[in-house]
Length: 94
Image 1 (cartoon, helix red, strand yellow):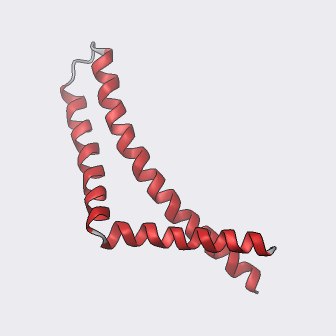
Image 2 (spheres, rainbow, N blue to C red; image 1 turned 120 degrees about the vertical axis):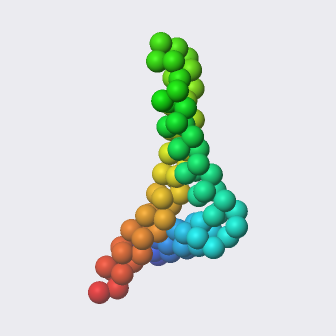
């Protein structure tokens, strides 16, 4: 692993740590996590109430659900990338 790759991995690790700490310890991060769950649950509830013949309404509810899922996935991916980069750095130390 060259110096640039090592630096990139270290930056990825640091970013993953920051995202994880933000979500667990910062009030805004905890708020975001709570809102993601609330939005998903609200969309599921609305989906049971929307007229299945109203394709536009169904799509709108599905979009709300998928938006919350996407945000959650982006945050999880940043954390996972940090762990993967850390594993790669550790593998090169041996």
